[in-house]
Amino acid sequence: MSNLESFSSIQDAYVHCLKNVLDNGASVAPRGIKTYEVLGPSFRILNPRNRLINIPIRNWKIYYAFGELLWHLSGSRAKSFIRYYSRFWEKYYCGELTVEGSSYGRKLFTTICDNESPWTKAKELILKDPDTRRAIIPLFLNNDFNSIDKCQDVACCCMIQFIVRDNKINLICNMRSNDAFLGLSYDIFLFTMLLELMSVETGYELGWYQHNIASLHLYEKDYGKACRIINSDVRLPREMPEMKNVEEIPRVIEYEKKIRECEQWDAEFEFDVSKYWKDILNCLIIYKAAKYPHIKKMLSMARVIENNPYIQWLNFFKF
Image (cartoon, rainbow, N blue to C red; front, side):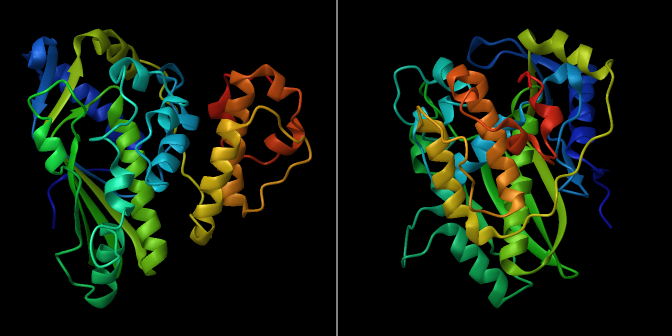
């Protein structure tokens, strides 16, 4: 029986991590940046589908979580893709055209040997030997090591490992570094989505997600924000619907590109995918409309909003 701290949702773990650093963080300054740090925390999320942060003051951006997910699922390393969803990538990767270390999707889904990707290899291992301990995917690669002493992007996640026990598939993620305020919630969102994807593709029931962090930290500039969050109105976290129709993902990726790159939009256009993926794509088209008002005029808003489970996270858009 594990004695790890366990939480029912990402939100509960997120608030706990902020409080942990605020209460116990030691002052350090890697690269000259003042930071508060706790070394070695680990915890489990018992319901990985319960991944939506519902803290109004946090202003958690669901469109970014979905956009980053599709960036990874596409195997892209293009900065222009992920920059569309957050100016962070322009600020910290100024002058670069690609994101190398943090492009986990490229490392997961790119064919590397025997016409197989690490993702496919891990899945085959699980299906062949459900008790395997070898379904690991390294995400800190040689290029990251070559960049480790330079002002370049270095992967924060070192490795993920899928492990099946009691007919449930679980995921253990090992991080060298995690920003408690900004990156943590999006990282766990991504990796729990990948866990659920592997669950669907292998047919095993969704199990727990474990997050191991070497350095959990809070930058000094975010200290006050973290204090306000743990003392704010923390609402009940929200669970995403069950993932379905994963064979539609390539089409979803094409639709995301269409949304991101379009200058015009057909008001009658319908996404030819199931509701699970259509709701996600509708969040992205709403974000597009918020960025470009002329797109809003071309949308059939009732169709985009109707029965969408994520509308409360799109409060930046005035319907």
